[in-house]
Image 1 (cartoon, rainbow, N blue to C red):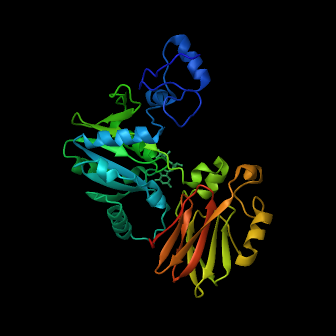
Image 2: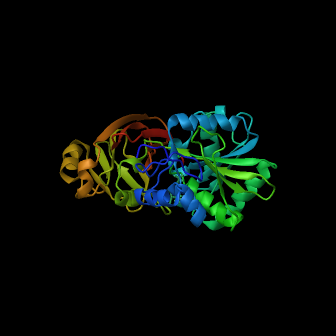
Length: 369
Ligand code: GDP
């Protein structure tokens, strides 16, 4: 059927191919909808029936258009980031798009960080990194979208800073934005009906509006995909192991130059040059670390990936990208970050290398802890 069918909820063009993109409808639901004459996309369907939102992603162009719109509003912008993948979840150029609107920076997934890390230190660190990226948030907050109790402070802050205006919630995918919005819906909207809007016909920038008590709205916007995250290269089961979901217990290693650490089979860290010193790994507790000699590491990986070094699982090995190497010269206490996996803190000067599946970013940053 070549005819263009639009969702009667949000107006998005219906498609049955890509579940993470706008307008997705399972084929069976589409057929049923055509019979009754009411075709909803899956996102609107879930919203209507379960009061639950689902994240969708936009293409880069549409996302830019959405950001451009923000500058023309008089609103509070809430930017949700994943503190576990801070650099990967910043929106490039956000400060240019928001115009004069204040930005409240919300670091989500605080439950994952070691309890030993002081919240004030974390927010200060976020503020510095935001400034480096040109963003001057009006305030920086930490939260955990998974925990209802964490919402009070966030909702109070939003209410304080919005000063009677609308609120736009923006973020890249995977930061936990929909989990957060669903939590907010539970606590504020109750049984009130949520609205899907497509107020800009011709664009596909649909948003979900949650009514606030003064006639204004909190508006959820679609995210943009950061392709450099581990999440795009691993199967669901592997991702469960690799993506941290509870408090991380740091693992400390004394390494000599010429030693290598494998993070299962998904990443590798080489200590190439420098004094014997400690290295602290912050990754999901279920990721198993293996120490080997650097000179034998290539052969060790070839032999054991998918076996001793898991994930990837043996049945996913065929689709798993090769590891790519990034070398770093270290001068001060530094984190080597594997996007979406975690990081390793290097405490002394030297030369190191981080390896990640092709497509996944490895970066260095000022140590967080
Ligand atoms: P979105 O793409 O930004 O809408 O992200 P989702 O809401 O779909 O969340 C992405 C992943 O992060 C899911 O696996 C969530 O369970 C997880 N997640 C979301 N919020 C939190 C949080 O506060 N803590 C933890 N540990 N995980 C979270």
